Amino acid sequence: MGKKNLPVTDHAVLSWLERVAMVDIEAVRRQIHSETWEALNSGAKRAVVNGTDYRMNGGVVTTVIFGRRNMRPLNWTEGN
Image (cartoon, rainbow, N blue to C red):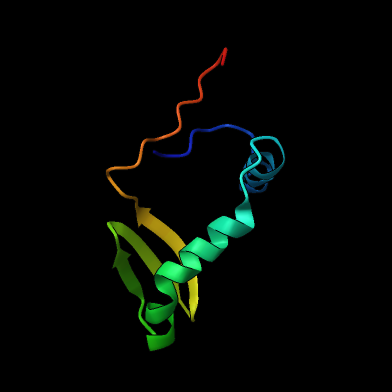
């Protein structure tokens, strides 16, 4: 899933998810931390937990490369 050339920032997307879609961003942050804290504390640069590939740098989770295959992706299309 790559970015398209749309004039919408990541901040705007995150704000929309939190304020319109009512996604609890802090709950997501806590989940990521609970899945990566051991790797973070050991100084690891990468951790794969339950099929999700996390990348870390300087004791901070910086990105997620691959998600769980068994999760159903959100399907938001025009008109919904």
